[in-house]
Length: 343
Image 1: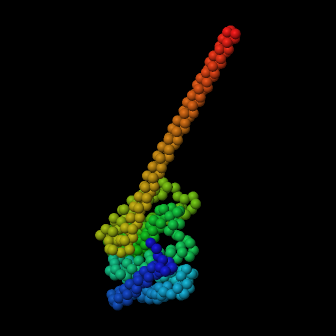
Image 2: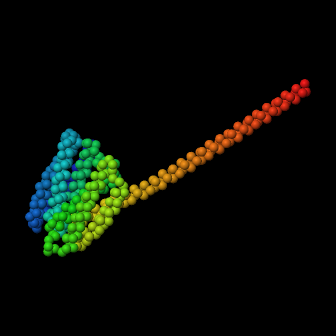
Image 3: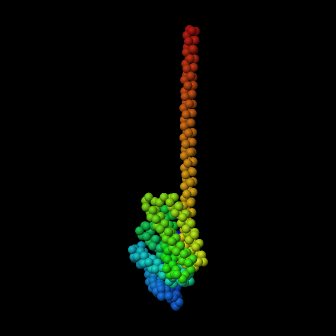
């Protein structure tokens, strides 16, 4: 999909970013009027309001600059645009952290469940738009195509990166829940499952970092090692998501732990499926190469037989020609002798 309008490569993304910030700003103002919050939530609400106002002013200014070619030439494709996008990315990251916190989130309740959908979902959407905006800037200005570069290195590298980010979110949220709720007077199944959630997410992150680190090296990562890791992670996340999102798990409510635990499970499944497809493709290529080798050998044998047959046929023709010449010579000699006798 083209993101170019009248020569401005990111105007659609800037407008989408502004719309997300407007929704966040209106939601934070509405949320601010509600008095039922703890001291931590009050601090987060203030932070979100300040950050959303600042982001709104910056994004609105960027969109207005695009309305005139002269002013747009001072911003579009310059380092100033990159700096603005970087700060918007940082602001949206802080808004996401403050709004979706498992214990003091302004868009979640004490159980981590989403109670203010606009603030929760649009903070995440705004963050993703800012990431795409930064990627578009790097690609357009510095010709650094991060997505294609990752796919060139390995077609599973983008999935591994998403897997790491999702696991980090699960680690942060579940650790916060464990620290806040797992005291001596709490039921053990909840705390045990929260601990399991932290352990699995940590293993996911470590495995992801090791895999990505090996893939970005020139030597790469052995396929069987990656395939084995994907299978193990798929099994771990299958058990993890079942226990985490159960009625006695920390991800039973619709929040960060719920959504990103399922995201990790889906990504582990996709990684495993991708490895299986590559394995099947390798088997097909091996069988094709083997058949090609057999066909080449058969063709060589046939050609050799044809050459040998040709040589034999050539020798027979040569002998027949010699015999024919001898017979002709004998006939001529006989005729000459007969003429001499007549004379």
